[in-house]
Image: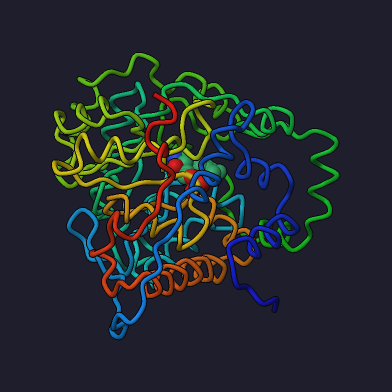
Length: 387
Ligand SMILES: Cc1cc2nc3c(=O)[nH]c(=O)nc-3n(C[C@H](O)[C@H](O)[C@H](O)COP(=O)(O)O)c2cc1C
């Protein structure tokens, strides 16, 4: 068993274990990948203020997200195709999250269905929807999530159309995959992954196949996905989705203060400041750099979460100190899942927690809720370099 001390260790194991097409699917951004890279490198521009001789005993990272108790203010972000990173991946990640005491968010584009994840877990998870055209399908999806006792709905609002990711096109990663000779040759080298996959029946989009109109089998998925997304989405439509759900609603994919104000108007309970992990608009600023202006605009009126680029507990601390109430991690837990299944997701959460807790102590804080700008040192133009 290798010694794992940081998220990067898990990424390296993940890369060796999982077929290239699925590794590339996660480890990529759109177009030039500038936003994908800056999501992480911008965290490095923020420095921490060391304090000493402060009582550090009895620290806590416990907090609340949309009114729910969490062991630390981190949720697992919705990530499609987890069941391709590791057999039954959604169930494994949900179980690890539940044991750790943080929310797991199931993506619409998951391999395991809502019902399947619910029957293999004992605590409520969050459910993520895309803003699709088909009202009947959407309403049924909401009903299914309610029946499965999902405790919050995450509506992703930054994917009306898809940002182009070169690697996916080159690898033939589509629904269903178009295997190239290179990807077949690569798949053949991933024996432990392949053996696990052969033992599960869950290999297609479980929330869609057999549920969406005309998608009776995986071969019709391609035409469905091409048609399903709604390029004409507007705020009235988002409000309609909000009103269909009678629990907490989190709008994910807000990167501009004007959109954050609109989110309040449609009655969202929280927003996630996010650029989809750099997978949509390449050239957009990183989430962490956009956070301060969004906090200034709406921070006292709505719960603000942040994702995109978090790879350590220190990154989490920086987001919280800039005012976010919560964070989501995507790739940081996908690496763990691909590397070591449920154990790997647990390991990711442990690494993040330890880094957050120790950094908090060295900054002279005992309670994650007391973090603030006083813990940070920012370059003078951090918020104003791009106007
Ligand atoms: C492989 C992959 C698949 C994703 N699938 C979804 C999805 O189905 N729904 C969604 O709302 N966001 C999706 N996202 C975006 C994540 O929810 C999240 O915003 C992003 O991963 C955060 O950036 P990070 O990976 O740098 O933490 C996906 C991200 C990745 C990396």
